[in-house]
Image (cartoon, rainbow, N blue to C red; front, side, top):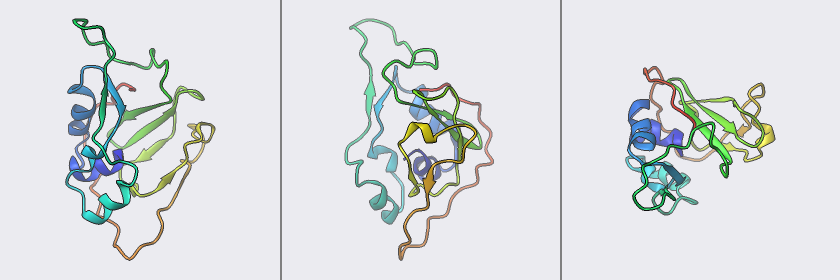
Length: 155
């Protein structure tokens, strides 16, 4: 989902993706949704939206009137995964297994199938993914990942 959003909705702009996901929400996200699929080619949207049929939901369990408190890498109770947006890739951190994770390049085909087994996501291991199935559709063009952005805090 994040790869497809970066490549299509945000046109390869890590800062715009980070602003949407991080800067414009008071606390964080409990789920990402099909709102990230805006602007994608129909065949890619169809491939990705099977399990993403509703918009994302922001996470905010603050008592009324309390100021926002960001979830950081020091406050990950209840979270399974962390994602750090770098200029060249997404760092995927399996929070129950490690403090750092491997990098998934921004030009990775978003239809790739990634494992949800945290033990496979070691920083010193290859990204646990398989190539997308072959289809009659031509894979979508991807944008260059050569953009400048600052690394973002884990959420």
